[in-house]
Amino acid sequence: MSGVIAKPAAPRAYLVGLQGPDQTREEAEALLEELAELSANLGLTIPARQLVRIRELNPRFLLGTGKTQEIIAEAKAHDCELVIFDDELHPAQQRNWEAESGLIVIDRQEVILDIFAARARTKEARLQVELAQSEYFLPRLRRAWSHLSRQRGGGVNQRGEGETQLELDQRLVRDRIQRLRAELATVRKQRDVQRRQRLRVPLPTAAIVGYTNAGKSSLLHALTGAHVLAEDKLFATLDPATRRLRMASGRVLLLTDTVGFVRRLPHRLVEAFKATLEEALVADFLIHVVDASSPEASAHHATTMAVLAELGADHARILTVFNKLDRVADPLRLTELKVQFPGAIFLSAHTREGVDGLLARLEDLVAEESIPQALLIPHSRYDLINRLHQAGAVRREQARAEGVYVEGLLPKRLLETVREYAIPAEIAKLQMPEQAGDAVA
Image (tube, rainbow, N blue to C red; front, side, top):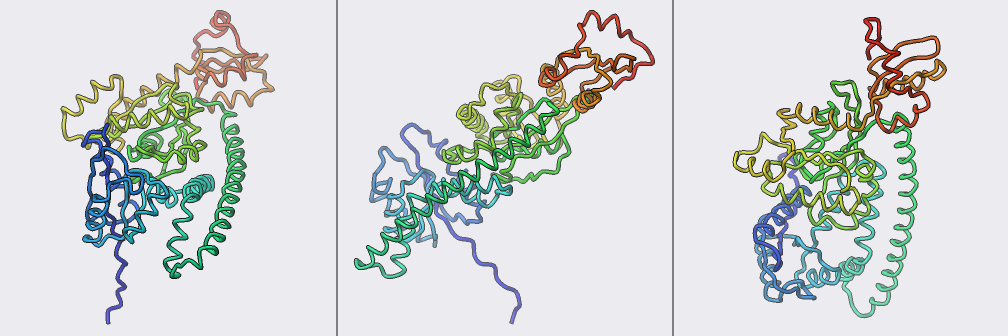
């Protein structure tokens, strides 16, 4: 007898995409392909899928009765255990589909929520996901009880007990939602304190944003050498990671990797993850990463910009970076992107082609956030000199009897802290001639 234990077969899912009247077939197929990738990230097997063109929505099944029966028959013919819709199903429609088919029926929102639940690592991310799940499943509790009633045999005599239990469960979930919101508020306050501590050395900051799987974490690693999770799959990382980038000039930039966006992202997740994406709101500028190898690159760019607008972060200065240059097989496609997005940077975080060009542009952006300034800092304030060095702002430094003379490019955030020690430029020029004995930072 063999001692090898067979792995359980992956659940099989039948995918249903919907092409609306205002949508091209190519757009609908791209969304259905994305749903397949999302589903595969949950370990599901996808033996078959179908794209349905609809002119008007059926309130009971979303689709017409004939198409509903056809999909159920197709799913069962492929031995599928569940049907996944690429569009949102209302709770009643979900119940109707499951009652009609005897299969588990879910939508894109539930798939994304499950992926987020599996990938969240920090306490804040886990709380945010649980809150989003609780809000999603609250109106669907009746669906869960319908499963239990079938297992118990159902029947009219059990309806009262079921309704009573349903009301109790709804109250428990509502209470849990309130506790999660309160706990999240506490965690956010702690994170705000951590951010303020980080900004005590008020360095320029940039948030890396973009569509999921565009290579944001890989780019952060290529720029800083930071060891952050970087996998070729959707939502590989949900938790923001901040790393220091010391550039050739000596100046320092704080880079933060953020959660990726996706089309048809559940609105409750946008709300739940607003705290995670607040890094994009407080950053001096944004690095918008787009997968140059994706045929949907333009759509992905538009999706990210739409979410940034919803967050109120679209007004920030944005540097567009097309990543995965090494995967672009069609030179014509590359030319089209360069025409469509003039001023964008094209690179490969994997091979590092073009990374030097991005570093040079970052130097320029940080320099724009800096002001040339001469300072005479008292000997009693060496803490300020240390902060200037940490920011990479010191170009010349000279000890004098009355204090330490410093010249440099100061980040605007730091300027207010040392403004009282500033020396007018014309006086500084007379006081600080070029000398071989000067200390250069």
